[in-house]
Structure formats: C-alpha cells, structure tokens
Length: 640
Image (tube, rainbow, N blue to C red; front, top):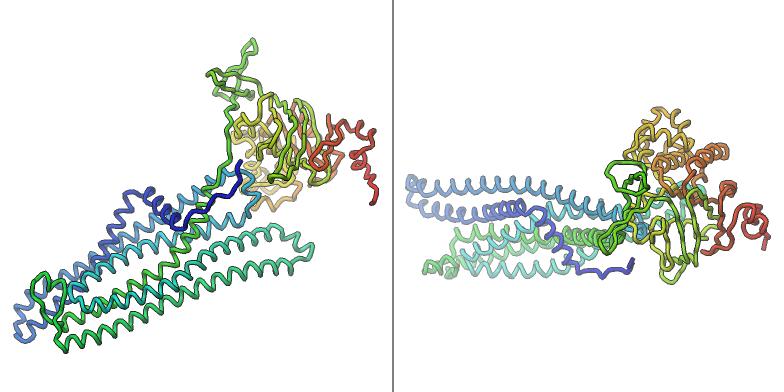
C-alpha cells in the first residue's frame, strides 16, 4: 500500500466541499431554509422604509390637524409594518427549526462517514496515529462543524442579505449619507482583515493543538498504572504542560484577536453614527440638494429633511451592526475549516486494499466427493476460485499454510523479516520463540494480511494469499492476542463475537473447552453478567479465557495463539492447555510464547532472531543442538 502523505488541499476547498456535501444531503430542505432566511432578512430591512413614510405622513398632517384623513393614510402603513414583523417572526421560527434538523442530521451523517471509513482503514493507520487524536475528530472537529452549520452559515447569509438590502435602501434615501457609511465600511474592513486574519490562523492552530492534547490524555489514561508504578507523575505532568501550553498560546491568541474585533467594529459604528449625525445636520441646515435613487427615479431632487435623516441613522446603526455580526463569524468559519480539514483528511485516507477474488462458501460433498456450493450452513467450507476464462473451481478449506522466502518491512528500507520459509499442515502445531522484537507477531500479522509482504509468497491451501478476499481469509483464522479486547455487553455476547449466529449452547461449550465456564458460572449473573470498559471487573486471566472461548466458538481451521496464556496462572494454564489441545485437534496452529513450557509439545519450534529463523525442530531436537533454544529454555546465557 502506498503510505505517502497526500498533498494538502487549499483551505477554501474544505469549505466548498463541506457546503457541497450539505447541499447533496438536503437538496430540498436546504433551499427552503435559505428562502426562509432571505425572507427574514428582507422583512427585517423593509420596516425602515415604512417607518420613514409614517414619519413623513405624520409631519405632513401635523400642521393641518386633519387626523381623520391622516389615519386613512397612516394606519394601512402601520398594519403593513406589523405584518412585516409577524412575517419576519414566522420565517425566523421556520428556519431555526429547519436548521436544527439539518445540523444534527448532517453531523450524524458525518459521524457515520467517519466511522465507516475507520472500519475500512488498514491497521497501519491506527499504529501511526494517536487514538485520542482520532477521537477528537468525532468530538471537537464535528462540534466545530455544528457551529458553522447551525450559526455561522445562516448568520452569514442573513447578514449579507441585510447588508445589501439596507445599503440599497440607504442609496434610495441619500447618496451623500451613503458615501459616509461607505467610508466607515472601509475602516471596518481594514480592522476585520487584520484582526480576523490573525484570529482565523490561531483558531486553526487551536483545533490541531486540541487534538494533540486529547491524544496525550488518552495515552496517559491507558498507561496510568505504569505511570504510578514508575513514579513518572511529575514527568508526565511536564510533558502535558508543554502541549497544554501550546494549546493555551494558540487559544489565547485566537480569542485575543476575536475579542478585540467586536468592540473595535462596534466603536467604529458609533463613530460613524456620530459622523452621520453631524454630516446629516450640516446637510439639513445648509439645505443641500439630496441626491438619491428615489429622487432620480422621480425626476425631482429635494433637500435633506429630518424624516430622511432619522431613519437613515437607524439604518446606519443596523448596517454596522450587521457588518459586526459578519466579522464575528470569521472565528466559527475558521474553526470549521480546520475541523473539516482534519475530518476530510481521515475520510480521504486510502482504504485497506483488497483485490482478492477467491471467496469462502458453504460446501456440500456428493457421494463422489465433488464439492458443490450451497446457501445453507453445513459446517464445511470451500474456496470458490473464479478463473479468467469464466470457469469456477472449488477446493476444500483445510488449513495448509506455506511461507516461501518472505521479506517484510514496516518502513521502507528497514526490513524486519528476512527470507522466512515454513510449512504448516492441518493437525500441526508450529511454535515461534525468540527475544522480543525477533518478528514472531509480525509473521501472524502477515497471515491475517494486516500488512502485505514485500517479497516472497504466502500460500493458503495452495492459493496465493493475495488472491483471497481479506474478509474470507480472516473468517478462516482464529486469533487470540496477548492483549485482550472485550466489548460492552454480556459475557455471552463477547463469546458470541467470534460467531454471531452461535447458539447459547455452542458458546457455553466453547467456554468449557477454554476453561472459562467455571469462573463465568460464579459471576453475579453468570453468562448474562454485563462487561464494561474492556471488562475491568474481571482479572486479566479471566478476560483472556473469554478471548480464547471467543476464538473457540468460531471453530476455524487455523488458530493463532499470540501469548494466549501469558496472563493465566500455572494451575489455570494446565486446565486451559487441555482445552486448547482439544481445540487444536485437526487444526493448523501457530503459537507464540515466551513461556516455553507451553510449546514443548509443538510439532515444530522455530527460533527467530532479528527477523530470521535460526533454528527449527522439535523440543528434543533443539535441546540436543544446545543452541539458542537450549539457552532460552535452560537460561544458560553467559553474562557479557
């Protein structure tokens, strides 16, 4: 698999992609919501016109005192004004409810997309990325999108429409006064560009620093016992202080810029308000001709009057307030872009490559031994192998494993396995022993195709392992790791995890075979006892017994035991070993063990050193050779 880092796309592309996904997810509801926002914006801008007309009418009828005639003219405009406010209220209620539905629905879809992607990522990705940082994408980064969708985008749309609407209304009343407003807008834009740009930069850095902090905290929580045993609390605190200080600095600078932006723009708006009042007063006293769109359309230019100046001041206040709101959304947009970038970087990761086409099917045998495929569960399996000419062949699943001159490296140029060759047949138990880091677990990782080899071949039932679909390959393998993972659910659920259609009796039989039935029946609710937080209410040995039972219920032809009894006491180990011996009958078994007493009865023991097989043979043969195995078994190492 190509593990090269992908070129980072421009930040604007992340926002475009996010909006595009939002439109695709809600192609009808989103435009309807947008229409409600536009309607709300327009109905918020139009009242200024009617307020001016009502003031003008009151001025016209004030001297005449003909209030009967005035009421006929003014009351309809008041009713229209009230209607606009009601319409604005309705549109606001509608779009806020729609946005709540769209926001939570879209975030749910994004979490599903992340989780689906996570299931398809190779093991390598999780080996090279901190789990806490991955979790941060589900929490902090998704929450940043929530702020963008539910608050920033509606506010941006509404504010832009209001600004444009109010701007044209101001032009309709007075171009002179509008020019003063434009002067203030340039000042606001200058401040927003300087402060907003710095704020956005540090908000992006804050989002990434937050992921680092969560990754570190998760790592420390998992290793809390080790930290306390070695008295490393102070050292961990120092390490945490460093990354926390980085988060503090980024957060401080981000909010310092953000917090200063609002008051500065607000005060620019206040200065603009005073400047408009002064300029408007001068124009009013000087009786300067009022150039406006309304005058140009009517073909008659009047002068600036009080009924023009007062609504204009209100509109200017509204205009600068909306510009301030627009500037305040820079932070939410910046955080969302940073969050979207991290989310998309995970979604865009190359999935686990699976070009296999040989599949595992239920098999039936006729009296002549010919294999036929069937839909019903028969307990017998066969490899379905399609060929280029359109024909199909079936071969039985037996568990023959062969490695031929296999080389492997986790990182290019750093080979960890050299020229590994071995053959394992059904009923044989192959043991790998050697020092830590010799390559024992790596071999089993290759059998499961968690990683792909660099050179050589691995054959399974005489089929190149790369031709077998990974899901079918792994279905035919049972794996018990030294580090057990139990999931939230009952003991029965965790055993059944190995075979989801297994009956309760099959699960109990597997537990008895693994030696787990005795302690399970003594639990408060037996097999129905709930396990949480990786089964912390059980001992490590008990968790490992459940993991062995889980592998047993799967009933695979090949079993891989990676230090499967390392956490079990000697007495329990004897019980488990008897069960495992029954479990291993007729199967191909690979065993990794540091406790050499567990591999004495192996058909072949392979001693690895720095990724090479340096010895192989039975226990007796290797003891007679008095080589590395003899030293491991007897502890006969010379002190250098």
